[in-house]
Image 1 (tube, one colour):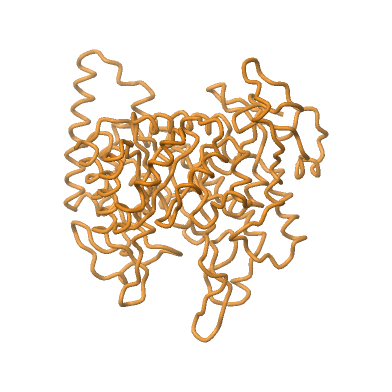
Image 2 (image 1 turned 45 degrees about the horizontal axis):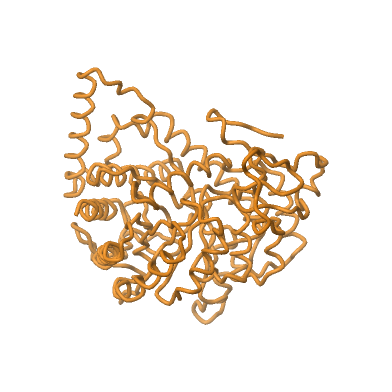
Length: 500
């Protein structure tokens, strides 16, 4: 069974060609001799002309291969039978994204890796089942579109837009339990696992939440596709993206000036007889991403592409492996090594060059541009010392990676009131140092990865209209996020760095 979209590329099969239409077979496709991600298998699916893998590239891999390795950060599911039933159900549901879309993103990220584009990856720390409305999705997209306009207009390079959205429901935790009052509870691992409420029943891992996460992701993607292709993302709408509370701020007025310049440019082009009705001006390519943390969920949404024979994790266009789960010989890297999606890897200040290169070799043995994005999350005080050895080691290994800065996670601290927070000055400082280090090492500073929301929250300190009181609107279910004003502040500063 195969579907092909309008581009002729986005094809997938829900089953192996010639396999029986049996749900049990779908849940466990068995072992094939497969080539590397993006390559056809050596047996089982006919190879396309000019794409035969080398003997070294052929290896055993299935969506279940990760189960043979130690898996970190997995919930303590109370009933394995119920879990497997939920995963089996997931394996019969339609994919959330298509293989061709993932390949298109890989091509765009290849431009980033080669210094011809910039990546903006942004969205919630952890999506919530409780805050799920069309307005919330629209407002988050608005902020990302505004940031992309600022970055494109200010820097003159294309911006690849990737959301932490439609799947970012799980979070790694530093401890399996947390103390609340006088009691210990299982840690909150995101709404796809348990609930934030401090009761034993709410904190118990519930496999039915995996299905709820799938359905919310599907609804979110449906709306995002409509916004991206249905007129909302039209450049002629740049003024309407400015939310009211941003339009009254200093950064909002600065954005309005850019929007007016864009409108004048479009009128000038039209007056000169240039076609301004092209889809490139009225639609955007918007991709989704999340951390591939819950491996059972990711396995259940992995499908085989009918055009290439390769496997793709159809839960998102891009997936990343975290600082806590990137060990080369463990389950997360094993799983991601076999899917054809573009991949990210988070790198903290303790990352060791040899270990990073080993993971790069495992995830991208063919050195494919756009396959790997390395996301530095060092903390503003650690970038200068920790990042250069990694850039040198990866460059010397020959991997054509994109380098991206996550300035959020390394700059989290607890305020006197007990709130987890970040200060925008620290966030901007890490970005500035990241740019400086990349340039001194001959690497392209290829993007930023930030946690933000379209809501007017007070979760991070600082900004041009400085937030001093976190308790006014602190609504995150996990880590603190930038609000729209702070996000646009950040975009203007990054645009200045790109021009420098």
